[in-house]
Image 1 (cartoon, rainbow, N blue to C red):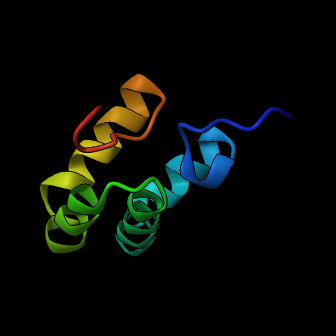
Image 2: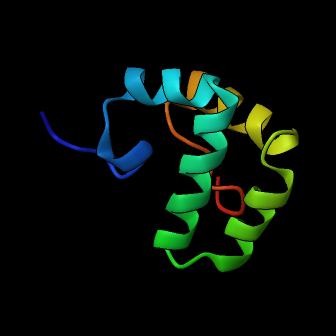
Length: 74
């Protein structure tokens, strides 16, 4: 199975969706991924506001767009 850069750590979409639904994993993985990509500001925004608007945006983009919102470049 080909891995996608759009989902959490290259996991399949359905697994990433389940992890995005859980607020703790969504916040933690989103924070780690942004820092791995070199997006320090996006990582800090995720760290500070991760349980609010950003979490809802992740869910909306995962369900309707089949990708994780990258906060700045969705």
